[in-house]
Amino acid sequence: MHFTLRQLEVFEAVARLGSYTKAARELHLSQPAVSMQVAQLEEQAGIALLEQVGRQARLTEAGRELYARVRAVQRELAEAEEVLAAHRGLRGGRLRLAVATTAGAFATRVLAAFARRHPGVRLALEIINRAELLARLEAHEADLAIMGQPPAGAPLRARPFLDNPLVVIASPEHPLAGQRRIPLARLAEERFVLREEGSGTRGALERLFAGHGLVLRAELEMSTNEAIKQSVAAGLGLAVVSLHTLELELAAGRVRILDVEGFPLMRRWYLVQRRGRRLGPAAAAFAAFLPEVAAEMVRLPDGVAPTGREAV
Ligand code: PGA
Image 1 (cartoon, helix red, strand yellow):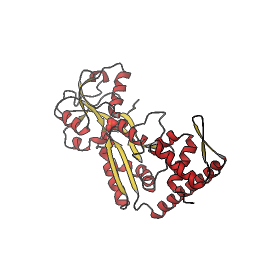
Image 2: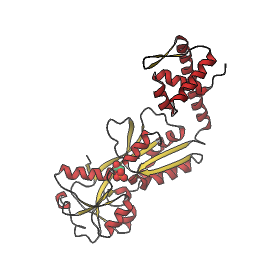
Image 3: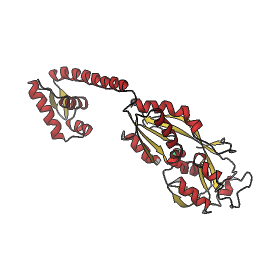
Image 4: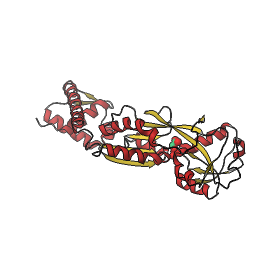
């Protein structure tokens, strides 16, 4: 008998899902292609393995026998893959990391340190917004993501590993620069340069204002923190950004952090993966490495107390 692994895989999917159509969808094949693989398998077996009962594809007696053994073969093959990966160690492994725009400021630094420790690993870094991050995880196109708290109820596993303090910045010439304990309501009179819809930073600011019954003057929108900081330095308005993006601008005196009541506003960084997904050796090594080094690699500007009120 010359069964191919592919035939067995197709047969297993039809039997498990009870449907040729669903199996075709899962395997990214056309339905005729699925039927053909099963028909060939049955021809070689010399006996019917599946029968159609109404809309359901059901296993025959012989089909059930084969199905149990195919499942066992699949488990063995998956284990064999893991054993080989463990033998290879990290060398030749691959890590696909996707991070939120704001986390891009430190993720490259962490990734560079990881690459120095594990030179054999192939690395891919994507810097995208929150909505895109969730889509990547959903489609299994990223092993791990670094982002703000993911939505409750999503099939994700998220571990917080670092605080993310948000601060209000202004140009050093702004009338509010240097004032002490500015009331939040005073900010409602100012124009803000905001991140795009879908940014976690923007969401936190919007919720803070809404929670105090304040309306945000949102006239300018930009999709990178760099553009926002330059606009603020040029006097276009105020902005709320993560302290993690400010090291250079503060040192160069291009922007000032305002002393606003309730700020810094505390968010948190999370390392996120799909629930139930086994990480490869490279991704698992990164998941262990990140919390170890994050606090020391994410440099905060001198003299800024990174404590504040929890963001909602
Ligand atoms: P960002 O940051 O989406 O504003 O870049 C991530 C977050 O704070 O959730």
